[in-house]
Each structure stands twice: as C-alpha cells, then as structure tokens.
Length: 300
Image 1 (cartoon, rainbow, N blue to C red):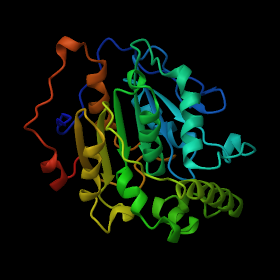
Image 2: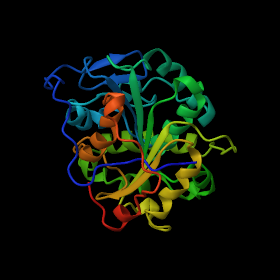
Image 3: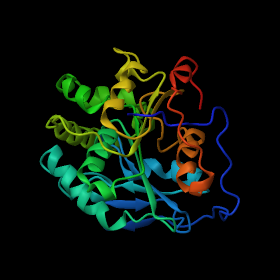
Image 4: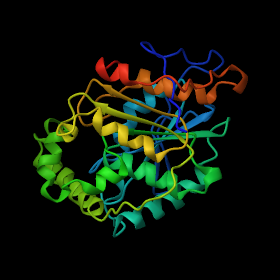
C-alpha cells in the first residue's frame, strides 16, 4: 500500500547542526556525464539532478549552492550541448536510459552517509524515474522527486509531436535569457530538438512499481499541465511506487530550478532532510495523511 510522504508545512526544517557550513568551491566534472556544481563531499546525501529538454547541468548551479547545507548536488550533463556538444545523443530513449544508468553506477554510494536521491524536471523527471527503475532493486535511490511532468503512462499519451522547439523554449520561460543573442537561441533550440526527438521514442511498458519514495511537483502556472490541471497531472505518479508518495503544486511555471533561480529549496530541503536523520529520530509516515490540502493552497 502506498503511504503518504510527510513534509513539514511552511518553513523547511533547519539543516543538521553538525553539518559544516557551506563554503565556496570550484565545480567539478566527473567523467562525461556528471557535474558537481558546488562540491560538498562531507554531506551524507547526494542529489542527482536531471535537466529538462534542452537543458544542461549548469541549470542546477543555483540549486546546488542553496542545498549545500544538506546535500551535494550531482547534475547530469546530457550530450549534444555545452561541454558535450560534440558527443552524440543516444539514438532513442531506452539507449539514453542505459547510458545514464551505466554512468551513474560508480557514484551511487552517496556522500559520507551513502544515501542518494533523484530530482528531475519535465523530460528530466521521466528520465530520472526510468533510470531509477533500470537500476537493481537494492541500488535504487531512497527518493525520486519529479517536477513538471505527467506520469510515465500519461507521458506516452501526450501529443508531443505537435510541440516544436520554439514553443517549448517559450513555455520554459528561458526565451528571455537567450533572445538577445541569436547564437544562444540557435544552440538552445538545437538542444531542445535533440531531446524532443529522443522523447518521441519513449514507450511506456507496464511494470512493477519501484520501492523508492516518490514525490511529484508542479508549478501552479505550468502551461504544459494546463489542460488537465497541475494537481490532476501529479496523482498518476502514485501508481508507480510501492513506497511513500506525496505531491504538491508550488508557485512557478514549467521549470522550477533554472540558471537564474534555485527553485523550491525549502520544500526540497524538507524532503531530503529525513533521509539523513538518524533512523531513531525519523517520524514514521502517517498513512491517513494526504497532500490534497496543499494542492488547494500552494506553498513552498
């Protein structure tokens, strides 16, 4: 039975007092696939972040700095953009999942505490979930957080072929950041086209739900979920986990974390903090509690 993933309303819990203060450090690249924007090797939890269609690992730099007191962010570096512009994208979604799963494998031990979680936005949310599912059951993340994405079954039913790169760039709210530079616009559109082509090859196959806890987020002003309503677009994720489940609509649009804003830091902090809390101090999930009230009054 799926239980509800508890979250603290209002302000996020304070980071553990024993954790050292975050300090400015240089970003670090791990192989071809991973960027550590703000290395914090002493943190007990790694949060692996998966970018949106057309996005790059650097989009998670503000989030990495904001979460440094509680987690070390490892961001995925997709090919065919940025520092990997000469690296070809795998030919289809299944091949991409296999490549990412292999790349992450050596790094899933987490920090000092050996814990890790996934966070993905839009296309990255679907990829994060499918990578979690592709991992051996005993090596899956403690928590998968999806943002701005319908569930896998609903994703496969969407009419994505009618969505072109220019429309998606507008919907993500990033057009304003690149419109002054035609070269940046073309680079952004090229990366989006690449990811949309891979996304179009996705096929949902019925499968057993994963055991990881799962939390689904959506921005209240997300135009991608406007046809069904942001809240309704999240509940389908519950069928994809045997672990605790929660969902919430928060202020924002399609992308919550971007190159110029960290996203829902307080909420993410409240979700990952229990993973690094000693077992005896953790609050057990309350099966009778749901997050439906928070969907009526979005808070973050």
